[in-house]
Image 1: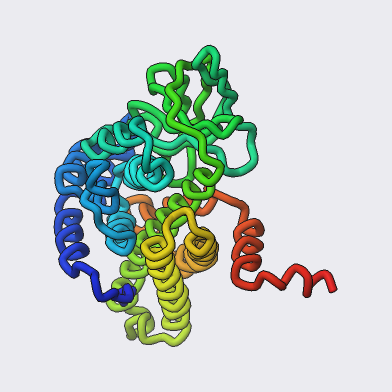
Image 2: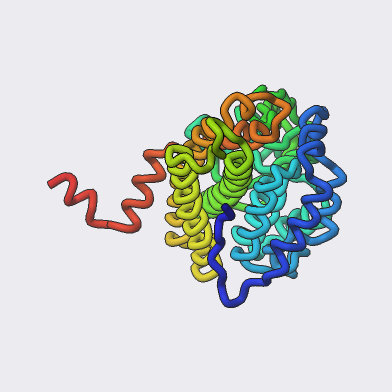
Length: 367
């Protein structure tokens, strides 16, 4: 039961095939478990392969060291990386830093330098607060930043961090100047808290629209990634239903089991279509546009809803076998449940989508 990704006329059909072939050999469940047990919870060899193959710079402009591909191409890459639970900082360094800087600061020499560094393999991850917690305070005269950021992905593997300070200035800080503390989690365990005490910082620039651009790209990457994770979990449940026999019949022939799997497939197909629509909005309207922002919010909120259904139903289909840590299913469902806790509040996302799709709705509701 494979999720179908709608094709665009300009799609490169080799992208998914080539990347899947590579990940099937170098991002197996054994590789993922090995990365989980390391101090950085990251696979340097996989990151090198992705970098050398230009998978991490696919949608970054050629002027910034990238390939100059489309968001539609990036969607396919993120989906496949999620499907493999690839332990590499693509959502953070490649999308949250390099692609963001490419879109938000097109005329900044510093942004160009940083984007090129990430495309070449440096791991510079965003440490950006989006849930209303206090943001770091930037002292421009001293060139330092002070504060605490409670949740940052891939921090242990990073050489530096991209931040947005209290005055709207985007800046970078070296990892060596930051206190990094691991935050144990249900899922992939690669989240950390950062504490900065007068840490030397190098400014990039200030743009009021940059924060929205960053959220758009982060929400898009997260939705694509989680959809890939959930698709792989569904494939496992379908395979199990076709092999496991009970009462003299394969359990996949029971209507109750079929309904559980059908609910997953319908929800994942809807989420995939929304991710595809967001990719189109990014390519047509740009990451700073209101359409792309609303589309990304819509995709993220949809995947939060339907991915919960996938985690619940796939475990129900597999029964006890799906709960043992030796089985591959928990590798994916733990990551899904952990990822669902990140990002903007669901009500905020729904209100954002409603305001964009139906601008007269608040007045009608008030009336």
